Image (cartoon, rainbow, N blue to C red; front, side, top):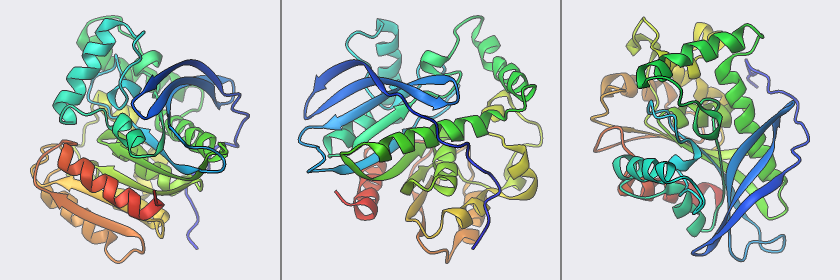
Length: 309
């Protein structure tokens, strides 16, 4: 059995509280707050379909938002903001799903399909972000976040992984959730394959538009890289190596043939290194860096087969 190169922090008491709730078509959207890591509270959307109970449990999904150099929203990239949200957040979220998701809030769609959904904010996004300074200053501020955490002995992406695992554990502990999967697009895909590899509560997942080889990556780090780099992993392993720790869980890696961020030749070589691993599937789709309706249908089909529903 393979040993894992990272250890998650020990679980802490979540102390879940509901901040606000909103009834939607076939499900309820809760804004919740809980302790994700020691001493730090995180807000997430928790979507619960009607009819779900301890007697009639449903699969749960941790949805992991993307980067996109768009920091005013995080969880709102996947779930429609509350009616009480500021108008600029509503407008930003609508613009984001129109451009990236064919106009669909994918978390809401999955809740309407019967999944219990949780979507946390990453540090520096949404309610955990900052809008001070120019757009360039905010973008470059990612380096300062990484350095500030590093001075305390914390790796930003490891911290995010542990917070994502806390969301998975919270879902797994709900009496009306019987199994847990995950999904992410772009940076969210990076988070999804890390979560599936290192969190035992996650039983299956899908990563859309984030897989490549180290040789295809620029030698110079951009500000955006700092939220995703775990130096101890990058030094010893290439990106497709992560699949060895996911297997034999059912997990689908999807990539667009015309994705300008992840060229097909590099993704194809990465996929070839995953070939033959139990549970691991790799597929290309016609398109670019996008989570459109056709890709959503493919994701839902895979999750339904892997988790049931």
